[in-house]
Amino acid sequence: MALKEKDFIEIEFTGKIKDGEVFDSNIKKDLEKLDKTAKPKPFIFCLGKGMFLKGIDDFLIGKEIGKYKIELTPEKAFGPRIKEFVQMIPIKIFKTQNLAPVPGSVFNFDGRLAKIITVSGGRVIVDFNNPLAGKTVVYEINVLRKVEDLNEKIKAFISFLFKKELKFSVTDKKIIIEAEKESAKFIEVFEEKFKEMFNLGLEVKEIKESKELNKNPKTPQ
Image (tube, rainbow, N blue to C red; front, side):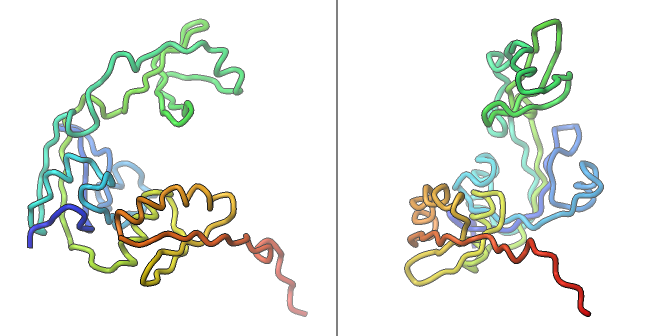
């Protein structure tokens, strides 16, 4: 059966710069080229809902489960390089934060990552372009299965949104996510997203961090 928008699928994948190196993967032999200590993890996402590159979504919708090699131009991958994204920032901005800019290092500026290009006197040239902007990339993808289990789908969506696992349960009308107070309001912002994805309401149940976890257990006498 052909894959369609809103289907959740599990894939194995490797992304490479065309005629170049691996930049992303969840396959052990390729992931080791990036980080020998990293452990591959299953990757589940929903087609057509912004959980992966739009170019990959567009290619896979209408396809069958199986293996594919997909070449994406910059416009369909990480976008073209934009010269206006290369900017000068006074070095005093870094010094006020006790940071030492070094060519090649990457800093977070209010949620935007920037790579240091040059440091000269009081001027630092930084590049806010995605490191893969302007590059043609190739993805080798193995669509392993279509995910049918609702809990698997919700777990994958929570991980995508919040970059961590959260405990949850499902009733016939809503998804109940457990979260500490400081996270609860943020999670509630995504209520409409959960309704769109799963046609279920969202409830966030506030929990307290267990103080017992911080106590040293007594040594048996």
